[in-house]
Length: 226
Image (cartoon, rainbow, N blue to C red):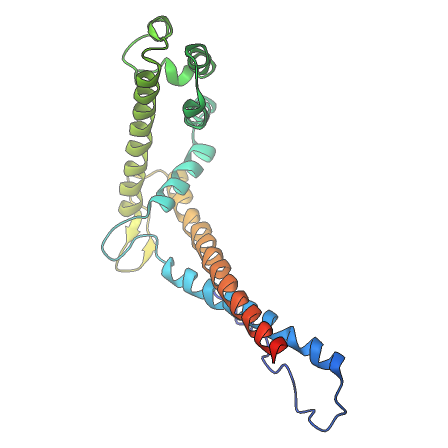
């Protein structure tokens, strides 16, 4: 819901008969900066809110950002400790693998994240992977590991998108729980809608405020020059 609060734009007031004061004039010059930036933030926030008010578009698509946010909440709230650790290790590998320079570093990365490296994404045992990695095949090993993890992430995000669409009533423009979806998963999806909505609103507000602030700076430069 957008805020109904708006700043009053009456910066100067009908004080034409007062004695001129250079200090008063300088103080008033700063107010358009505040007014423009605040107005820009409110306008941008409203645009962001209404553009993202529905998590599923009328064409039936779900944004990657929304699906990723919902999936991460599902991991945090609904998975077992082992499931949480598995996806934590996936994130850990993806954040470090490009920085690996030596076979020894690669081996350590695999051993430190055994839930992933011992899973069936590799098709080979961890011992085999550790034994066969060397300086000649290090790059191809890193690339293969990244592709395997990216495939897992893509698979989960696509599944989450389909689950979100299954919960979305396009006629009523709201989430409705299907019989086959568990309560805890449905609650995660429904609550992600509100959080994602306001995050996007904040992003648009920041952009609008920055543009408005830039215009206000140019305005003050013009006033100071003249």
